[in-house]
Length: 267
Image (tube, rainbow, N blue to C red; front, top):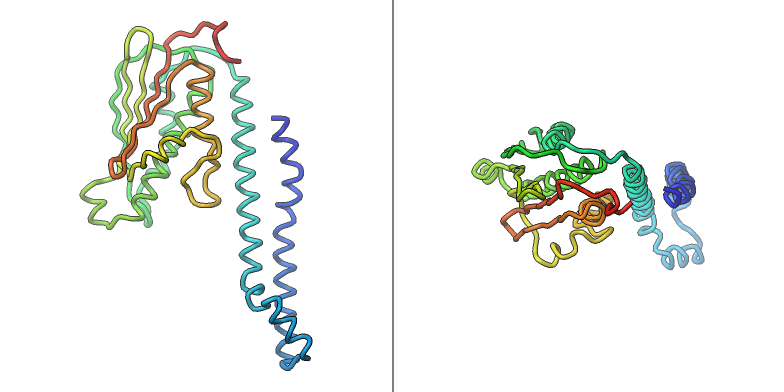
């Protein structure tokens, strides 16, 4: 949290100045156009300089450069938010958690993203719950893991649907299947599977690496799954796995110990 705060202050200055800088640049470009209209025949020296700096390209590219800077600072904000959230969750109370309740509340928060719109079809949710005992977990962190994985599945399906025709979507509707079961007397399992595009092996291998993302620039921090891995595996001694093949969707398996010894928890 301290590091995030230190980064947040200078990025506020940068982000806060981008919009006025963009307005100033636009004013200067408009003034330059007026000069060129008023004086259409510049001196030879000015002509040489215009060609040397490729003025026409600069005029076209300058706003794009500033736009990309704005996208970059927004991505930094997303990263800082994830860092602060994780820091806050680390301090949350340790207690027994109802897995089914955690899943349902997370799905409720994401419900609006799964409804049909003019640009994207509905994403159906299929639930197959087995009765589970309460599990020992830090309050809030299971919600964060579920939010990260379910959001990732929604993003993957949205991206896949952009590549499909309405007929293809009708024949194979987008869906997320959430299952819970008791593996044995010591472990419970949560499975979250989508029927999206899937991933090649080289992507799957890097999935839990910090800052790794397959999303387009400005979308996603590449931290969600790596933080989820830290929470499940490193902090609670569980397992977080992903099985995926191109064209066959992706399935995330979360295995959680039912009981934790406080002395064994990574604080």
